[in-house]
Image (cartoon, rainbow, N blue to C red):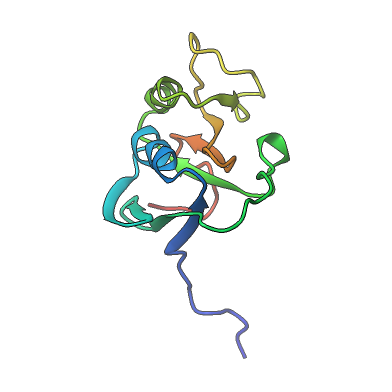
Length: 141
């Protein structure tokens, strides 16, 4: 008897944002995910393979997300041009806080990262940004 399971696919990620419009600026304008649908209190974005739905958080105040290098969860995004993504995010007011794959150097706009960088969305979700096609094993887009 084989113990191998049929192939599953990750197709959807949902995030509840405290500031929906600022969060959309981050994911759409900063990282380049494409908007496919909008409805009151939510947006659906995609990279062409996955649905990324951002909801407006409407519940009680919640504790801040643990971010930075203490993050419990982070998301990886591959962009076509790493330097341009860093410039866009910085121009939109987001802080690049670690260039980890390049040796943990602090971000210097005069010397853009060559392999990856980390940035937080408005709620503190850490995003590991790369242009490399082999950053994460098992990914073939």
